[in-house]
Amino acid sequence: MSEAIKRAIQDGKTILGLEFGSTRIKAVLVDGTHRAVAQGTWDWENSLVDNVWTYSLEEIWKGLQGCYKSLTEDVRNRYGVTLTRLEAMGFSGMMHGYMPFNAEGELLVPFRTWRNTMTEEACRRLTPLFCFNIPQRWSIAHLYQAILNGEEHVKDISYLTTLAGYIHWQLSGERVLGVGEASGMFPVDSETCDFDAEMTAKFDALTAHRRLGWELKDILPKVLPAGEKAGYLSAEGARILDPDGNLQPGVPMCPPEGDAGTGMTATNSVRVRTGNISAGTSIFSMVVTEKALSKVHEEIDMVTTPDGSPVAMVHCNNCTSDLNAWVNLFEEFAGKLGVKTDKNELYGMLYREALTADADCGGLMAYNYFAGEPVTGLNGGGRPMFVRTPDANFTLANFMRSHLYSSMAALKIGNDILLKEEKVKVDSLTGHGGLFKTPVVGQQLMAAAMNAPVTVMDTASEGGAWGMAVLAAYLVEKEEGESLPDYLSNRIFAGQTGTTIEPKPEDTAGFDRFIAKYKSTLPAEKAAVEGLV
Image (cartoon, rainbow, N blue to C red):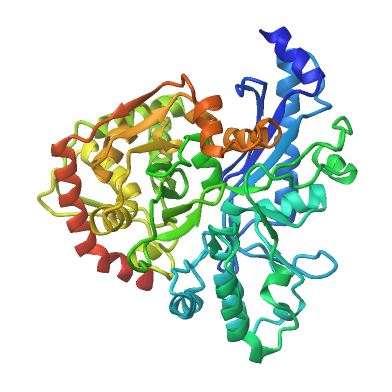
């Protein structure tokens, strides 16, 4: 088997997917059977600079090159060859955010990531104007907020893109975006697979009196659906990606996508009435809908699949960061006792303990807000908080379960609107991301939150980078007229196995009781944001 993979690598028959996550950059190389044959990683973390969550350009390029180098070293160690040629490639990143550039290609302000909640006024004005929910993390919200703030750089904007779009542009010279990623910048018309023309005109009319010197369509990327050619790796791009000079240019590149699109792809959730839940630093669910929602809900975003189908998205800024902090504390405590712990085993033990807890956490309450959480109305920032009643059943099991519930609570609130109020039908939900790494636990509690079966596939650990590689494979492998849903079902996931957990009635009822108290205690979290500075 390794000889066949070695030959594929030497013959340039492998495909690269690389994704910029919130805390890790990951590269996956797949062969002709779409199996991951090599991987690379690079850990990084956002910084809060002048009250803005950001990554510097230096960190972006250092991370890209470090991740790719990690991949090439894995190839060399496994197969004894140097990676020089690729059949196709694609790049993905955290969706949304704000990266405006001038005509010289210079970034005008530090990258404002999805995590920032500084655009409340812009969203309050744009949502009724468009009759379409505009979340705070969307690029258009950041752009309009900068206009409202009178920021000097706005008049100099020549191009506005996302992290994935920026990487693709620098490596290929093409100013393009995949339609799924584009739908997190500005509303997209699924019929045309392009930015909504009527809303674009409304925005230009809204800002005409400011004499900005540009119209919106002139500064946004070209939108492409999955399967369209999005350029080729340039000679300069090859040198940027691989400073060692081994990688040859000319590699076909698929449209850059967001982590939502790669998550849908990696879980075979691009067909109508399918959905997926991605749970890591942030948490979001995506459900491909049969029709438009009956009205605008600020808790629900409408985006698209990588091939342009409408998707109802519930996105929450906070998920595992507070859980990770508590596990780190327990690890430190164990170290003080002279006990050496394996981090994965520690996570597994603590997560499994949560399954023995009271279904409603026994009077314990936790808020995992490292950042603001628009779904629950916290726009000014976050304060992780744990509180309990004096007579609570204060056990390790209830403590862990309360924090696991908290990591899913805002998502549940949004999905209760989608599934109970809008009556959206979902045939399957697939989970992926760090929260599901420990078997059973995340699935069982998420099934309780959604009151629906949750499946984790055997390929889930490959994540978004693998999903990006699959989208790149679709570019070069699709047959005439072959849709993305059919390609995934027939060629990628045929014969794939996974585990499905049905919701337990007692867990669902317990989570509902927890959520009722969670909502009634939210004023305390808001007070903590205001008072703890």
